[in-house]
Amino acid sequence: MFVLPAYSAPDFMQECFVNAPEIRTAVCEEDGLAPEYFHSTSMFPEYFHHDGTWVLAEESRMDCCVIFNGNSFAVTEPRRLKKGDIVVLGREEDGSEGIYVHAGGFPEKERSGDVFAFRQRRSRETAFSRDYDRFVELLRYEKDHGNIVWVMGPACSFDYDSRRSFAWLIENGYVNGLLAGNALATHDLEAAHLHTALGQDIYTGISAPLGHYNHLDVINRVRASGSVRDFVIDHDLHDGIMASCVRHEVPFVLAGSIRDDGPLPDVITDTRKAQDAMRDIIRRATTVVCLATQLHTIASGNMTPSFRVVNGIVRPLYIYCVDISEFVTNKLHDRGTLSAVSITANVQDFAVITARNLGMQ
Image 1 (cartoon, rainbow, N blue to C red):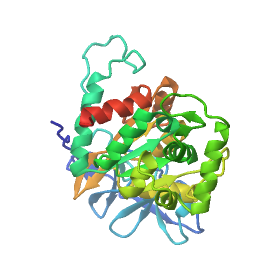
Image 2: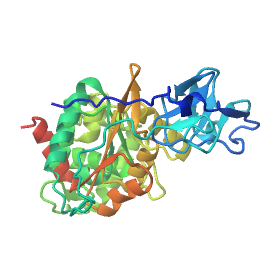
Image 3: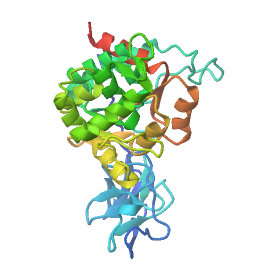
Image 4: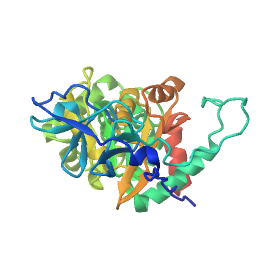
């Protein structure tokens, strides 16, 4: 049975906190231009000393500015600053400038007490059985108490079983939001409409005659319908990832890239608008699961804190990174998303195993 770990808040009665200076601020003099020596946030809980009290900035994320609103602190991207905003200053995070970053709020994972031990880094040789069990327990908990956002590359759309499995997860309440790109949606809709992905049968892998036109035809037909939702309805599609999102009203954001074919009409090609739309989905998440998409994984990880405040209680925010490439899972850690759990696996198998462990027949 999954139990949410209790948050251990800092003891602000300690002398170092009681005698700490209060925050310094400066007024933003131009839209999108932060004052010199602005404070940049991390993924951890951050407290700010004001009027004798240490206040938590409840919705934080990496590489953002902090706006002081009189009694509360709002975290925002520097590009969203407005002239007149009061911005927190300070680079020290130990309380000496009225800012405290609390990295030890949740108990550490179990680990051996030995200084030397084999296979401490997670790789293709790591045993992931317990990770799967914990992940399934977490999803069962989050279905009733949290919000689960999935970040997906196109790999899951290329296989019959993985599409069926992920559709099952959507239909049974284990998906509250989806972040992806043009390719995932295009090839999943191609599979639902023509039973191919990039022209290959999603079950047999056999290439269809002139199959390389299939995804382009699908994009064209979606554009004719006007949106993914309208295409699903117009063509009475019921299987796969996108059709399940549409029919179960699961919000999705498709962020574009330079190499996109088409793209689909739902794809957001303005990077700032795409970031804002992704943030709207991420800000509700308590668990984020990233499947085989390096750039979307890093982007999502960088806008996701290690915690969430729910009904006044600080709880951990879980991030999973699943990829067959160790480089990708390590890259997320290299970019600073230290709380991510990495699983080296084929994401098609991962989707199937997860759904079956949750009860899919």
